[in-house]
Amino acid sequence: MKKYLFILFFVLFFLFPHCVFADTAKSSIIMDIDSGRVLYSSHPDDVRLIASTTKIMTSVLAIESGKLDNEVTVGDEVLKMYGTSIYITPGEKMSLRDLVYGLLLRSGNDASVVIAKYLGGTEEKFVAMMNEKAKMIGMKNTTFENPHGLDEETKNQSTARDMALLSRYAYQLEEYRKITKTYKYVVSTKDKTYLWYNRNKLLKTYPYVTGGKNGYTPSAGKTLVTTAEKDGLRLTIVTLKDSDPFENHKKLYEKIFEEYHSYKIVDQKTFQLTSPFVLGNAYIEESYWYPLKEEEKKKIRVIAKIPKEKTLQSGKVGVVSIKLGNELLKEIPIYQSVDKKKKKSLLERIKLFFTKS
Image (cartoon, rainbow, N blue to C red; front, side, top):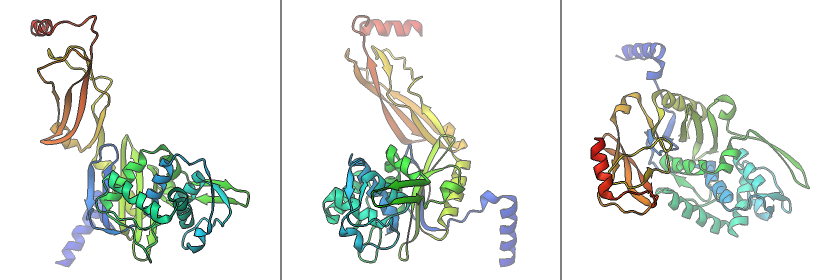
C-alpha cells in the first residue's frame, strides 16, 4: 500500500506540482490586505510565542507617535539586553526613526527597549500601550509582556490571525512600508557609523515581497510575517513555529497568486445610479476591490438600496451592498449632491423616470 502511495505522490509531484503542497508551519494564514479576506489558513487561532515579530507592534507605536525625527538618548536599559542587537551604547544619541530602522532591519533588542523607555517612560507603561493598541486593531488572542519578543522571562503570545491583522494595520502606514522594504541602511551618529542589512531574505530572493519581519527564539521557533504584491493583489502571510519560513512563504504566495486575482467590484469614478428617489447627482466616495477565484466571479452581486422617502438635502441617501453569494462583503454609502437652483420636485422626477422607461 505504501508503495502505491509513493508512486502516486511521485506522479502528482512531477505532472501536477501545484497539487502537492506542504505547509511547514504549525500555524499559518494568508490574508488579503485590502479586504481582510482570509485566503488560506492552518490552525490560525492557536496561541503561540511570536518572538521578534513582536517588533512590528513596537514599530507601529513609534511611527504613530509623530516623534520619528526626535533625537533619543540611549540609557542604561540597553545593558541588560542580549540576542540580536544594533550595539548602541549608553549616552549615544540617535533619532527615533533610525532606531526603528535598527529595530525592523536588524531586529535590535537594544533598540526596542530604548524606544519603549522613550515613548512610554518605562517599559511597563509601553507594554500597556502595546496591549491597548492590540485591542483596538482587533487582536483578541494576543498578550504582550515586552517590546522585543525574548521569552525567557516574559512572554509575548499571539495567533497567526492576530498577527495578520497587525501586519495589515501596519501596512497602512507609509513609513512602515518604506522601512520594511529597505534592504540596506546606513546611520551615522557622533560616536560611530552603522551599516544594516535587512534580515528578511525574501527581499532579495522573491521579487513580489514588499516587506515584513522575521523572528526566532528556541521556544518560539522560527516566525515570519511578510507582505507581497502582484498584479494588484496585496497579501500578508504569517507563519509561526515554521521549520522553513522563507521557502514556505514563497510557496504560499505562489499558490495564492495562481488561484486568486484582485477585481474592482465597484468603481468610484464610473459609479452611476438612476432612481426616481434620488434628487441630485448620486456618488460614492470609494472603490472596492476583492480577491476572487475565477469561479467566484459569477457569484458577486452588487445591490443599491435607496429608501423611498427622499430629502432635498445633500448627503447620504442609501448604500451599495456587495455580496459573494449570500455573504455580505461590504456596504458603501451612496451620497447625493443637490443643486437647489436646478432641482425638480419629487413628482416631476418620478414622471420623468417613467416617461423614459
